[in-house]
Structures are given as C-alpha cells and as structure tokens.
Image (tube, rainbow, N blue to C red; front, top):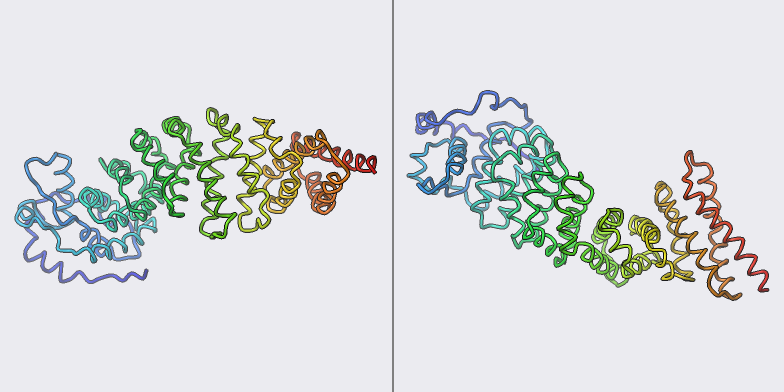
Length: 455
C-alpha cells in the first residue's frame, strides 16, 4: 500500500487555539520516548493514525478501575484532550468504522517495518489497541487490531513490549472465542509468534486453562477453512517445538484432551481430499503442517506410544506413500516416510500391514529424488525398505510374485545405484543406515537367487 504523509497543519492550528492549555494539564511523555527513532514516514502522521484508532467511548466513571484510568489517561494524551473535556464529549474522536478500518490497515502495513513498529509502540499503539479490543463489536476491527499486533510481534523489541502491557495478553487470548475465521487466523498467527519468543512462558500461563485449550482443539477439529486449519495446527506445532518449559505447561493438557487422535483425524480428512477430485494447492501446506506436528509427537515421551500403535495412522501414511503423482505433495511424502520409520522402530508388528505390498515398495523408491538433500529422510527410507524386504522374504513366495518384485527393483536400478553411490561418498555415514543398506542388498540377492531356484 502506498502511503503518503497527510498534512496536519489545520489540526495543529485548532489544537493551538482550543486545546493547548488543556493538553498542558496532562503529564508529557518522557523526552527519551519522543521521536528518538527515525522513520521513513512523517512521525506526526503515524501518531495521528494511532489517535484515530481510539475507541469512540471511553467513560471515566467512578466504577472504573485504577488500571482503566491509567490507560484512559494515556489515551487522552494521544487524543490531545483533558479528562474534563472527555467527560463533556463521551463520543470521543468522530471516526466512522470505514475510516477506522482505513487508518488501521495503514498501521497494519507500517508495522511490518521494525523501525515503524518500535515507534508505534513507543507512542502507545498497544494501549490504544487494548482499549479497542475491550469494546470492539466489529469482527473487522478485531481482525485489524490482531493483525497490527501480529506484525509488531515479528520484531523482538516490540514483541517483548506486548507482554509488558498489563491485560493485553489476556484480552488477546479472549479473542479465541470469537466466531470469525479471519479474526481467528490472525489470532493464531499472533499466538504462534509470541509463543516462540523469549516471553513464551508468560503466554503459556495464560493459555494453559482447560477452557482455552479445549476451545483451541475445537477450532482445529471443526473448521473447514484451509487457512485456519494451517494456522491453528501451526500453533500446535509451535507448542511442540518450543522450549521445554512452555511444552511442559501445555502439552500434557492437550494430550489429555485428545490431541493425537484429532491430528490423525485431520490427516485422514486431508488425504481423502488428495484421493478425490478436490486436489487444491492451498491444502498442500495444510497436509504438510499436520504431518510435521504428528512427526514431532512421535518422538516426545508420553505421546509416542499412542501414535506408534495406531494402525489407522500407519494406513494413512501408506496411502500417501502409494500416491502415483507425488510432485505437488513431495514434502509431505518425505515426512510420511520418516514417520513410518519412527512407527516401525517402536512397533515392529506394523510391518505386517504392508507385507508384500509392491505398490508401497514402488512408492518408497519414488520418494528418493525428493529427499536428495535430506539425510535423515534418506536414512529413514533405507530403514523402511530393509524392514520391508526382510518381511517379504519370510512370507510365501511364488515365481509370479518374485518376478513382479524384482521387476520393480530392476526398473529403479539406476536410482538405487545412484543412492548407494551417494551414501558411500557421504562425508559421515550413519551406522544404522549402513546396516539397513547392507540388509537391503542381501535381500536383493536372496530374492534373485530364489527366483532362479523356482525357475
């Protein structure tokens, strides 16, 4: 959005004539907080935009708390009026909803810049948004407010200040109960950013109530909007990947409320979309995020057992591996292969689920090109292939099944040879992977020998 500085000369003249004495009654902002950041936009213009976001009503009645009055006084300074004037003009700045949205969207864009963000925070934008969220009945106003804070949270200093504004974290978490998809998308984006920062534990303490976590999981499980699924599951992934203190506060409650099963059900829904005629590019990143969350869960103590014994999950991953066209969901297929390796390492009996499934074997081999830069994934692929071949040899085999098996391996011989060569040239070989490759090689020779013996 192209932003041009507005002239504030007329506004300043009016203030000089009618409001200078009243403004002087309020304590001035500290000198070190005024215009100490150079911005590419006129500072007066930014301040005027913040002032125009002030809520239309800010009553200073006898029942207001001391914290409310402190906030109100700060906002009066921004508004350029005294408390007496405010009592006589309870409607506040005469800014319509359309104008509010326009000014808010400009600040939303400006907040992407670290310099502008810090300047906005110094000039009470967080306090103004807090006051707005406390009275807002407009989903669009709420969305813009959360969007502004979300952009501010992209910058370390501004993000820290969000946690320092009393009551702001609580009012932000309360927005989880708003039934509006755009608002919730901005909400989860903001929560994800803040949870990953150094103030994550502070946020976790507000989030850890069963009521809030149940609401989060309800949204994850019931929304049909791809963007909201991605944002909400991305938030859960942030919990799983964040520091131990945050995870310890939130994960046990989430698991108790059914997180593992919810993720498996979500995976089933997304894979169903892939198998049908509804392949949409906007859903690919959703699938990838769900798989990454499940992958992290499978290596966390206390969560792995439930997932690793899930035949439903194993079957879904197999369906993904066996997709004929993997190009558009390559990352998800690679993650699925790693997940299968994780599941088999904890529940070896699951290998029976894919016993003599030649389409599964072909699917595994097709994934190697997509994992060329991912050593962990290539190791996982070899581990699964070696287990698969070993299991295949234990079953009943006839000439036809052996021929089909070896035909698949022969059709992928160049790929297998290249992979083996890459492994030999790797600077650091994994002992486990080396063992898996040797097992696979022995299995190849054994199968060929059996084919000849049957002939």
